[in-house]
Amino acid sequence: MSAWVVWLFVLNTLLMPLVVQVLTEQAPAVARWVVIFAVRLLPRDDRGRYRDEWLAELDEMQRQNVSQLVASLRILLGAPSTGWALRARNRRQPSLAGVVRERLLFEYQAKGLLAEYGVPVPTGKVATTAQQARAIAAEFAAYGSPAVVIKAQVKTGGRGKAGGVKLASDADEAAEKASKILGMDIKGHTVHSVLVVEDVDIAQKYYLSFFIDRAERTLLAMCSVEGGVEIEEVARTKPEALARIPIDPLTGVDSAKAMEIVRAGGLPPEALAGAAALAERLWAVFTDEDATLVEVNPLVLTGDGRVIALNAKVTLDDNAAFRHDWAGFADPSAADPIQASSGADRLAGPIGDNAHRCHRAVTGSGGWPAPTAVQAAADNATMTSASQHAFRK
Image (cartoon, rainbow, N blue to C red; front, top):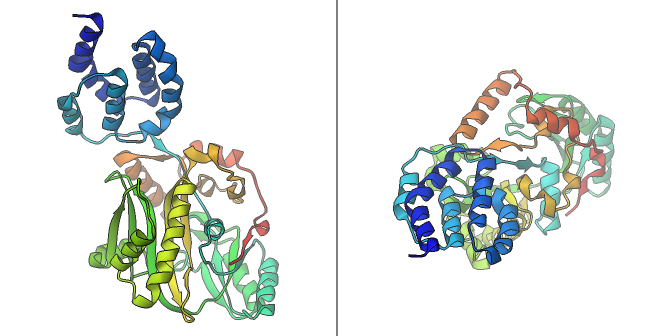
């Protein structure tokens, strides 16, 4: 029996369960050492071919199911299957898998990104002072849209209930409403800017989103005819009104799949074509921009029959920032540690979920979290002028 066959036997019976345990419970640095060690065990001629590629992709692998990483290691080493080792791992309780870095965009940033992909959005501009809000509203009035909506730009929900969304009938009222909203505190987030957007004649409101379902380890689309309210409330009170459609990442969302999604959501016939076309474009944003969430709530049918994204939320995978130009998404409110975090540094798994429940409970009660890497992000963020950001249909 050759030494290589003996090594495969040892790997199969003794080392693989240990690798499973290490990759499940220990720090990413240990997992990196395991990959380096495994590569060194290959024949010399094969080492260079695998080493750089595996180390470069290790961070992404660590965010995936540990069993997938173990299976990949086994394929690399040429070892036979050890289903019992993977089954042993699956019997373990979930543990902290690592840090999921996410970049949550402001509404105006999310809408601007969607508009670049052809998603129809209302005309709007950002203001940081009441005088700017008056000037923007006057500009819209000159184009025949005197009524505007003033919307607080904070990275949290519940703006409307907190008084952070106001309708203004003219430029003077827009300035008055903006002055009241600017400086507000909404769930621990200070309002530094407002979005002045044209008022839209809304006939019906819907909901549409694409996101990574980490619990089920899949991509998911959700659609509902019950839009304009918190989707968690719809899921709790009317679960039958919320369609959940898994997406195959290999086939994605084409016109047929998009129509399947909006039909499953119960949208009326007059909105199907426009909503399906918009869903295809949202999917392009989701995949091309390395997003973890693209959400439109509400997606509206206007009085003249158009389907547009009235409000949008986009969360980007910050680990993919190296292949994108996201300089325009710098946080103008970097002095606020909560907002400067952009939703980044989010712990994955049940520990991370509990941490964020605690975070919301503390800030929602007027408290303040202890300084962490979030504060470092605030110190390093670059201040930009929000008034430079605008988007058009």
